[in-house]
Length: 111
Length: 111
Image (cartoon, rainbow over all chains, first blue to last red; front, top):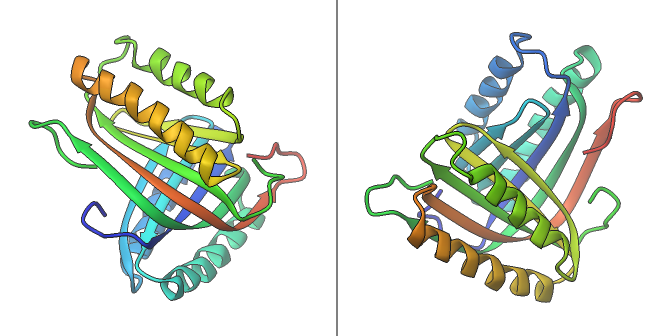
């Protein structure tokens, strides 16, 4: 992600869920990321998860790529939302990234 | 956040750090969020942290609010970046939120 120049696109996926380790949630989240990686226009993905809140931000080269992934992801999420009880709520936000500033400690690895 | 209508603004802060619980990082992150809450134009904030990666997304009403918070946050981060060793790297992305979809399970709480 770090070498893409704005403008590009971000999809912020925030979810709250019932905290039940071992319920297959982590595996499903990884599978979603894996699917995203194979979509056209994929630039990168970052995820962090607490016990209560998860945030996954995926980055995309074009509005078309976002729309294609959005339809795909929403379909998958809607299926899971109805069928499973992982998510208490989730929010999908589609954004245009306008500016980026990065800092890396000399001995560090870039995000 | 959930009742704001797009367009509004998001600042995505991704950071990698050395995982050392009890080093004051969590307290500093909370203090940053508390500072954000008192800035003009603040709409909301969401944070999730793994051992390795943290993502904090703050939401803002205007470009002016983002700029004011950005300058403030960058100043604070730069100080810490030089002085402390919490962060291995961090990236700040300024975004325009164009679209939002939320889903809440009937017995759930909104993100």
